[in-house]
Structures are given as structure tokens and as C-alpha cells.
Figure 1: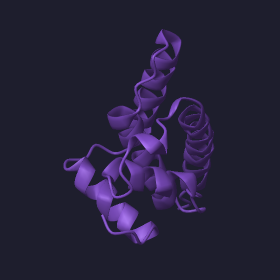
Figure 2: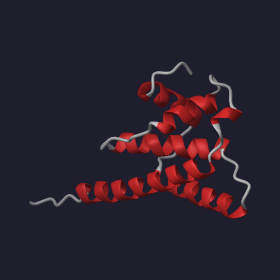
Figure 3: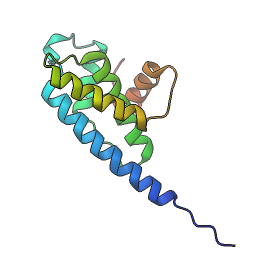
Figure 4: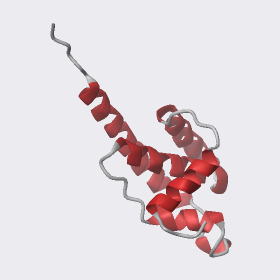
Length: 123
């Protein structure tokens, strides 16, 4: 009996969606993200911004999920655009990210752990 697996197709589809969303979220972050000068150097937001600035997800699904998780959390917690259309765009991006990301508890703790793993800063 032959079993046809479409796991490769599903992973490719996820990869395309994740990469597209990552690019859109990074564009939003660069355009509407807060200034680093507004935070202390050792502030959680500043450390996250340092990690986001060098963020390059690798080819693994876990890496893409981690990058999206970090951007979703940061945009939700620290990015407050003044323009209504920018706020709507942010909400759209966050909701798309939440559709792709697995449901999790203790999101902040997982993000901080992920940051420690990819960016050896003292958090």
C-alpha cells in the first residue's frame, strides 16, 4: 500500500506564509517601531529590539516560529503607532501571526528563553 504524504507541501506552504509575514512584520517594525532612545540599555524592550535588528530566521520551522513569536509579542507590547491605519495594519499582522503560531501559555517566558538561545544577552 502506498502512502502519499503531503508533509513537504504543507511545510512549503507554511514556509511561504511565514516568510511573507516575517517580511511584512519587519517592515512595520522598521517604519513604526519605537526608538531605542526611549528605553534604558538593559530594558527588556531594548534587548528585544537588539535581537530583532539582527533577526535572521534560518531554514527551520522552529526558527521561523521563534522569529514570528518575538515580533508578534514585541509589536503587541511595545509598538503603539499614532496613526489609525498603522494601528489597523499592526492588528492585522498580529492576528495573522497568531493564526500561524501554536497556542501557548507563558508566552513572555518562552520568548525570553528563545532570546537567550539566539542572542546571548543578559536578560
